[in-house]
Length: 470
Image (cartoon, rainbow, N blue to C red; front, side, top):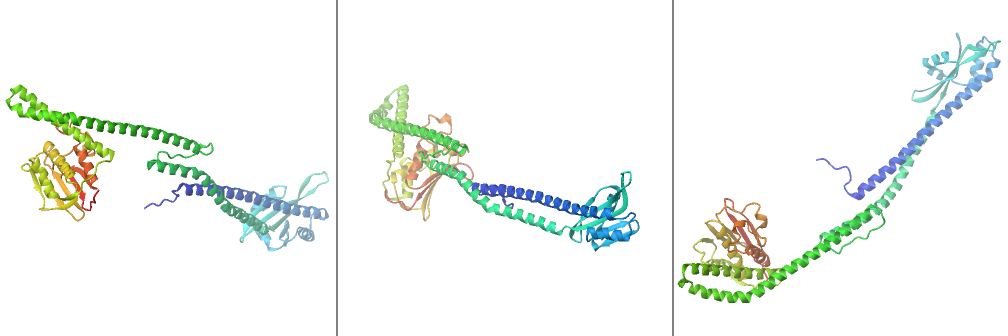
């Protein structure tokens, strides 16, 4: 597994980036300064040494005789100092073992150039400066020509190297000293940057939790302040939209409740009329009887719709209450099927007795809606299976129809939703399953929809057995 080497938190990333930039900048500046100082130190030392050697040679050459003898070469070598080699044809004057370091390249350069030549080498783990030159003499006509004398001097640069090492250590120390300062500055910078970010985060969390009054005061005039202003404007817009939506929802619920309530009295009268009409329908002519039956059916449908709307309005208003009593769940389901003459069309699988506390009327509504949907939209065989566990009672309703399409499942419990637009005039109001779900939740349970393993729809009601009186 690949590990993330770069920090994930914004604070950590800002801290690391700031520290890296500061330390690298300090290190680069220190190393650059150390490099420049080292180069200048080596150059000045080289100029000082070569200048001293040139002065020493210049001071002794007027006293020499030409051609020189061994004594003259010894005096010249002694004037220049230790680690010096003076040659003239076959004569040599040597002082010190360092002269063994003189390279052929230096000899060649000295013999081809009428000037002082230098070369830096490292031998035996130590730095050395090689200096070589030819001594020129002036002829009577003023021309300067080589005398044949060659002087080679070797100087140890160990002290210079130690000074360079000291500069390098100083540069490293400077970079190290910049680290705590960089960390402190990074913490201060990260704090100033992240404070408004944290405030925006907290405000966003409050908005997500439903506190639409949450706002963040903008600070300064930078990009974060502009983001804060934009977020506040967004929150204001969302709050305004939500307030308008709540007003519309409240108006719609109040309208449905008011209309349903106002319709109860005329519908009661109309129901009594259609009952009389149903009694007299047998003695009517065929056309009149058909019209009467249509009026009776539509009136009953309208009554059920109004009752469902009033039930939904009670759920929305939070006034729906349970009337809890000791109920035999298996017996209540059997009574629900018997009351609607469904026992011969539905297979009931249930134990003899399952006692629990619940609202018997609301259980009847749930089972009637589930079985009624299975009979209307599914195919035989419709089965109701009641079972009990230690913590809950389960009522499962299945049919042998084509099942619920995938695009329908998320909307099964939506109000007024019908999977098939062609069934817009079916007896159902489109509220039955929504009411069944609300009744299940009122008991502290749940109602789920899906498809059986083979074919057919399956609805499962789960009710907790520890329901308290409400």
